[in-house]
Image (cartoon, rainbow, N blue to C red):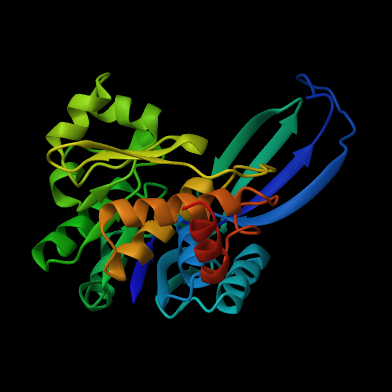
Length: 293
C-alpha cells in the first residue's frame, strides 16, 4: 500500500480571449471543471497503475467535496482516512486561461485543516505503508510531522517540494527522495544543480519537463531522457511522475529504472486535457517504455 498525504481540490477553468480589467465584465469562451490537488492527482496516478493506494487528506462536505470523494472511490483509491469538515469548503483552484497564459487563484479551504492532530490519528496507517508520497499544498507543520514519523519508523518517503514557498530546509534530511523541477531545485539548493545533486546522491531527482530527469548515483550524473509525446495539457505531469516513480520503487526497480518508467507515464499524461484525465494504465506505460528502448 502506498499512502499519499496531500491536497484535494476542484479546478475551475475559464477560457477567455480577454481578461477583464478592474470593474469590467467580459464574455468567456468555455468553462470546465477538473479534479485536482496534488495529493489527489498523485494518488490517482498510483491507482491507475494498479497499485493499492490510499489518500490522507481533507475536504468539505459541500458539493465539490462529495464529487471529489466519489471520483477517488471510482479510481479504486482507499478513502477511509479522508477527513471531512462540514464547516469548511473543499479546496478550489480558479484558473483563467487567455492567450496561452494562466492566472490562478487557489483557495486551500479544508486542505489547511489537515493538521498534526489529524496525522496523529492515522499514524498507524502511515507506519504500515510501503511508501509515503507527500507534497506541500498542506500546512508545512503537517508535512514535518509526517516526515518525522516516517523517518522514525523507516518508511520511505517521496517528497515533491511544490509549491516551493512551503518548503523547509529541515525536510531534506527527513525525506528519502526529493523530486523538484529545475527552478524548484535552484530555489532550494542554489544555482549549481550539479553540485546539489552530488551532495544528495540517489536522493535528489530533478525533473526536466519533456527533456526527462536527472540524478547523481554516487559516481556518475545520470540523465534519463523524456519520451516523444503529443502535448495537449501539461497540468498534472509532475504529479504523474511522482506517483509513477513511487510505484516503480515499491516494485523493486532501481532509481534509473523508476525514473524512466515515470518519464514514460508523464509523457502519456500530457496527451489529454486536465490533470487526471490522461493519467495512464500500467499496460500503456509499459508499452511506451518498450517501444522506445
